[in-house]
Image (tube, rainbow, N blue to C red; front, top):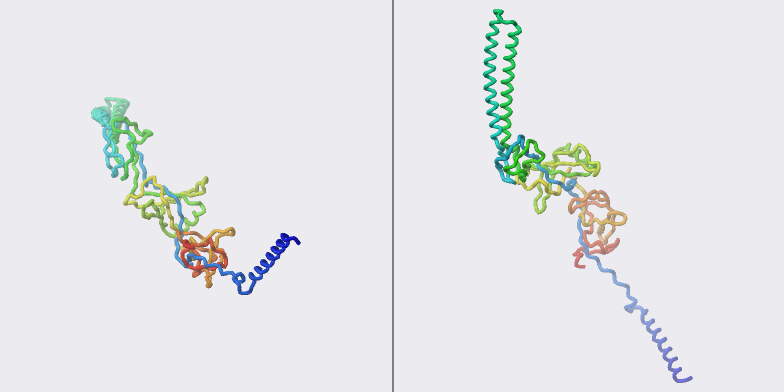
Length: 376
């Protein structure tokens, strides 16, 4: 056999022997390759206990602050604005003078009406005297009854004229009173729509100014019509408390004061109102606020941390920790969520320990250790 061929055959045999030796070494009892795999490390998680707790039953909504009363101030007579007695945005008291109109035309009308009254009273006195004289003449049959009736009619006419003059005077005096426009309520004035020097007409479309009453004040909000039955039922048991939360502010408490008499068919909601004392004026018309209506308090509810409840393809579930520090997946039925607490309707019992953080690395049967899951 040639030398190169003998060298190639020897090399192949050597490789076969080396492979067999390596395979025999791998499966030698007691070698590292034959040792069993190490158990997986425990997963660090955070846990909490399920407990009984009194939990309020609440409805949350977005509300809008409205003035308790809003009045558009309008002139009741024609005239020119002589003076504006307040500043825009001022708080005005009930009865305070807001505007003064030119009184001179009405003062002239009053003087004329008073003069007409004096004239007509003199005519009435003369007619009464004439009637007295003609009555004596009628008794002596110096005049006919028809002539006397004419004189008596003159008395009645003069008396009616005097009454008309007195009514005219009262009307002009009323117009004079309307020349001074007072605030009908205590509130805050808005922007002056018609400035001093302008002419105004009685009951014009445009208001002179709008006064809003803000102490107390209302907050209106809408709730789904499905909640109406509960609202009415709990309201029958007593006054319902309402709280609003302002941005960067503390909650403000009030009471439910109004339930609308019909639902909105376009949205399926019903409008409610709550009244707030607002003595510190933290609520202002036009603001949007978060509203919380408290219906009642559920006693001894089964409560778990909200972070423990997970959503899966078959619904909501939690990981429950057993005595061996392993976890089991358990389906739960959630009644409602109240902040950091979730009220459990079924699936958990007080005293159960549930995982609140680190669920992404868990599966049924996973061994856990209580620690900081973010550091793993």
